[in-house]
Image (tube, rainbow, N blue to C red; front, side, top):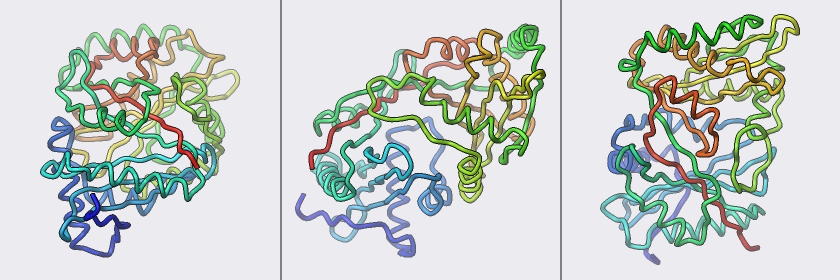
Length: 342
C-alpha cells in the first residue's frame, strides 16, 4: 500500500508505543488466545537488551497517523550473518489490505542493505489434537515465496493435572540408571565451576537437534557469551531455571535442561534447552533433568501452572520423553526461509 508509512519505532514516542503495544495485544488475543497476554515491559526490554550476537530492529506501519502493523527484523553478528529474521503482525481490523506485503518488501530492502542473503520467518499452524489456529501466517509466507524448511510442534503440560505419582515413579526409575551423576540446581547465573561445560552444551544445540533444511550453522558459545546472555535476560526481568547432571568421575556436565519466565509470568514458563552429551546418552539422563527441572521450577516459582516446549517434528526421542512427562501437542510452528537476491 503506497499510503502506509513505515518507520523505525521510537521507544521515547509514548503515544506510538502505546498504539504499538495495543496492536500486539489485539493480535495475540486473536492468533494465540490460549497464551498469556504479552507483557509491555518485557517486549520493550527485548528491543533494548537483545541476546548477544543479535541486533533487533522494530518497525511500525502507520495509516492515517495510527499504528496498524508492526515488524521486527533481526540480524546476527557472530554466526549466521547471512540470515535475517523477520516477524510481525497486522491489526486484525486491517488485514488483507496489502499492509503485510508492504512490510515484507520493506524488510527485503533492509535485508539486502545489510548484506544478508537469506530471510527467515516462522508461523503457527494447527496440529492434530491441539488448539485451533489461523493459517494466515503460513499462507502469507508461501505467497511471499518462502518455503517451509523445518516443522516443529509446541507441546504444553499443565502441572496441576499431570499424574504426580506416575512422574515420581518415572523419575525414580530413571535415577536407577543415573547413579553416577550429581544433580545441580540454579537460577539465572550459572555456577563458575561448570560454566565452560554449559557453554559447550549450548553450542551443541543446533548440532544435536534436527534442523530440517534450514540454512543455518551451529552457535559459537563460550563462557563470556553465556554470561552476556544471562545479563540480557536479567535486564529483561526474565528468570532462568536450570538443572544439570555432573558426571562424578570426570566432573563434567553430562546433561542440562532449563526453562524461563517473565516477572509477570501469569503461571506460564517455556523450556529452553534439554540436551545430553553424546558420551552419556542411553542412561535416562534426559528424563531425569526434565522431571527434576519441573520439580525445581515449581519450588522456586509460586503459581507456576503451565510449561511449553518446542521440538522438531522428527525428534522422536525427545518427543517420547515429553509424552511420558505429560506434554501434549498444542500447535505447530513452521520455520520458513527464502533466498534474497542482491
